Amino acid sequence: MTSLRTAVLLAAVLVGWATAEIVYPSPNKDENDSDFWLELGRKEIEEALEQPKLTNVAKNVILFLGDGMGITVNTAGRILKGQKQGNSGEEGYLVWERFPNIGLMKTYNLDKQVPDSAGTATAYLSGVKANFYTLGVNGKVKLDDCEASLIDDNRVKTVLDWAQDADKETGVVTTAQVSHATPGGLYAKSASRKWQCDTIMKKYKATSGCKDIARQLVEDEPGRNMKVIMGGGRQEMGAPLEEGAKPKCVRNDGRNLVEKWQQDRDAAGKTNAYVTNTRQLRDLDVEDTEYILGLFGDLHVPYEVDRNTTLDGTPHIKEMVEVAINRLNKHDKGFFLLVEGGRIDHGLHYGMPKRALEELVAFEEAVERALELVNLEETLIIVTADHSHVMTINGYPNRGNNILGLVETSDDVSDGLPFTTLMFTNGHGYNFTWDGHGVTRRNLTGIDTSDKNFEPLAAVPTYEGSETHGGEDVAAFALGPMAHLFHRVHEQTHVAHVMGYAACIGPYDDCDRPVRVPANVYETIRDQNREKRKGMSSATANGASFVVMTLAAVIQVVRGAIYC
Ligand SMILES: *[C@@H]1O[C@H](CO)[C@@H](O)[C@H](O)[C@H]1NC(C)=O
Ligand SMILES: *[C@@H]1O[C@H](CO)[C@@H](O)[C@H](O)[C@H]1NC(C)=O
Ligand SMILES: *[C@@H]1O[C@H](CO)[C@@H](O)[C@H](O)[C@H]1NC(C)=O
Ligand SMILES: [Zn+2]
Image 1 (cartoon, rainbow, N blue to C red):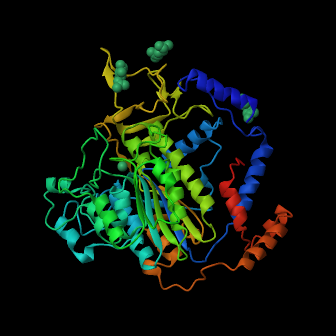
Image 2: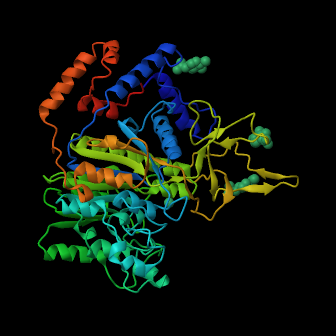
Image 3: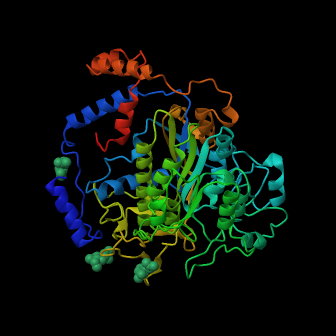
């Protein structure tokens, strides 16, 4: 780090993030020179020409799902990540933004232009689009229609079934409740995502044969076969709670589903562990524990900005992922893992960008950790979102302006007041007042807009926690075998189909592709590459001949914290 950057960082710490003068410097010292951009452009062209196509079978599949991580959130998260390192931030990349393949997903539900996380989870986990708020059922089941959800033909198989049928090991890690919409999309069949516990089901009078989602996880296939289940949700599971836990979905049927989960495994002679804090997670012996259940919150796992980071507290998502992969990676037939950054969405619903973006940065660390732990030649990694949010990035803050800060002055703004770069079109931050002459908004000068609880202005008022999802497409970033099947605007269901096809499971299990690319293929590629690197002009001349980048080079590009 240059001394200038250190000084800026120090200044930022001393005066607090609120001060508008903090401008983070660019790490690219030569960016004012034409040559810098011409060279960077040349490298990107070279990288694009060298796009690898790994057509072998994916032994493992890891799906990273940033809940609510729309493209705006992704961009803001990228900038925050850079600023946390003392850089201006815009020039950097999140680790998945260097993955070689990307597509855009249409997120609508069958009955909604703007979707929820349950209908979308059904789409990207089963390959079949569904209605708003429904889990694991097709379009014939509308919200709350318990009866229709019980009809076999209306229930869909998911990538979790496909992976288990292929004898792969499976798991889920989330920072939301383990019975929440995204994990529920893997294993539950429910006409409402709200039916997480028996009490709620009674409220909806949905008792005619429908089972709550937490029970489905523990009692039914494929949920109960998962080797790793980590997240929050002790309340829905009927497990012992912390003192003073707020009752949201308390079990009234007397079931303790954690005990039931343990008893089932003990009865089958299977090693298992139930863990509830960081110490217990770290003490786990993954070599000797076949089934792991970790519940790190009565409701959700605490936000990264609130988390108790001591051993008695709750683990960082990266630690959860590390344990999950270390456990699942032992199996020769491979594994499927879903990792959800579940609280990016919650921070946004509360209209608190700092909360959401810190969740995104933590989620990114989990992806980075995973890349170090698996063989990327045989693991398909997809990073995507279920839907977007109505947050936007306002114009025109200066380069390096605190992404959580203010745009001090703008000739375009007619009331002359500063405003935050990040703002919502609806949300709890709505705050307009009548000053006797006209409608005004708050003068934010001197307010700490980087506080974790700060709510930027919203145009339409909502109840607390009810800022809505947004309807534009989300990105899917992919790396590994068959990652190139993401190539245009797709239906969100495409995610499930790519996972199935890449791993030769589910609807694509009749597959004759090689399990591994022979080692010498990479040697050939490496030689071609070496020759090609002798000069860019010869590579361009050879453009017609298909040159594949070495996997090692791809990994270097993906992992490198390089800016150019
Ligand atoms: C680029 O030039 C501008 C003035 O036009 C200057 O403020 C800025 O610091 C320069 N950037 C770098 C990285 O030197
Ligand atoms: C906003 O508040 C600051 C500090 O109190 C003040 O200097 C500025 O004039 C105010 N802006 C407007 C438009 O009232
Ligand atoms: C709303 O704005 C007024 C001034 O316009 C301010 O006094 C008040 O604190 C604001 N409310 C919130 C919740 O920020
Ligand atoms: Zn949401």
